[in-house]
Image 1 (cartoon, rainbow, N blue to C red):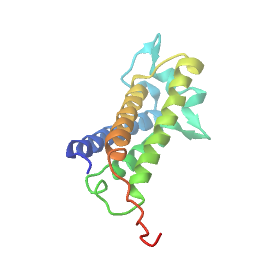
Image 2: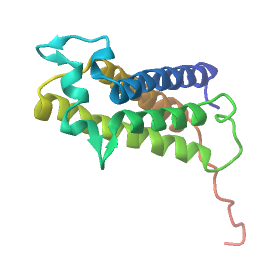
Image 3: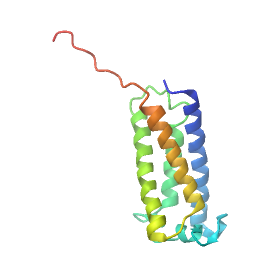
Image 4: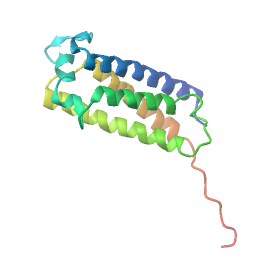
Amino acid sequence: MTPRWVVRSTFVLALVAVAVSAYLTVAHYTSPHVLACSGSGAIDCAKVTTSAQSRFLGIPVAVLGLVWAVAMAALCSPRAWPSAARWVRPARAAAVCIGMAFVLWLVFAELVLVGAICVWCTTMHLLTFALFVLIVIFGYAREPLEAEPIDERV
């Protein structure tokens, strides 16, 4: 059974991710200058959020982050963790792994391609990493998979 603190922590982290990604989405559709972030040097949110890498397949990364965070909040809700539906647990693990893979690409893009870091994007990256650790280590690896019935006739 997943510890209660993991269930609560993942849900809170996912809700914070919803808030941060919603903030980034609003900034994307209004102005990057609404972001409370430095605009000079290595930390430059406007440079990151308006770069070519701020879109993936024509979709703003902020919107993709918001959709992902809402899905994670649903998959990490206190009602979803003990769900008897067989698809919830692997869906939660797959979603957080996809999110982590995307974060690795985005960190590379910020550091190498854009040459600047966005504090808000980094916050999302850290939230994703924390969810990844909690879900993979405590929420997936600790849960025993259902064993196949043993055929006694063999």
